[in-house]
Image (cartoon, rainbow, N blue to C red; front, side, top):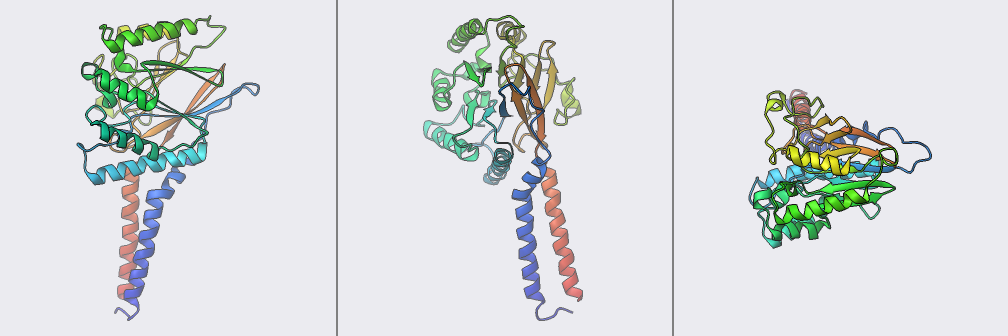
Length: 346
């Protein structure tokens, strides 16, 4: 039979277990999960190295799609993962591989400003980390719907170009706008082709003299499907067999060959598919990064990479799975129920 102090004990137990549940599932689990992750092995001792964090497809919701709780839940998950990663790994550069926003192609100017501010708040890095962003189809639209205004708005907001070359610690990076490689003479494609040619000339060297740039893109380079992908975060079974449509799921074969010919990349990083993949292009490896958001991927991941003038290495970090968090909440609820039963029959 319940004693007089049992209601107080019940309330106290409820509050303690609820607080522990929230603390673990909404904060501490990110530290537990990412603790086992680390940068890949160091480059040569005499080489200056760059530590980088690479992620894709955050798809921050706007005013049209999704429920307010959906937005809150998934943005908190991304925020906590990112800030935990910043605390653990302190990257010198962070690369966002497009589709930063879910509704960037639709939103009016005022909403876009708020969008941009939310991005800065959620993915705050501090002054010591450089942030680079490539455009995705959700940021400015697929090729057929991109206007000069949408293109300029994104470029101005993130200080980027259709094809952009940056140099960090002696390592060349080339960031491209995937939708600018349709080869149809549009305003975007003309600019991209000119910039690609110019950068190609700047990078001109023999294979022994330099290893080629690191390529960053939203769309993957051409491949038929994800059939050969065998990563922990790769597409589920039957989805791997779906054929990619050129210019929709990947850059066209002809444009991919042009990019390879002009840039001769040493390694490539792409997003867009929401699933992880490692593709061998004979002369280099392409890493497709899965979506950073639970909204698109139940078991998301990001990459840690270490670059030097003569080497590159990559490791994959799996993030907490959404189902794991649900199971943990169920576990805490079960403990609370057992606690109530114990009080009832004491």
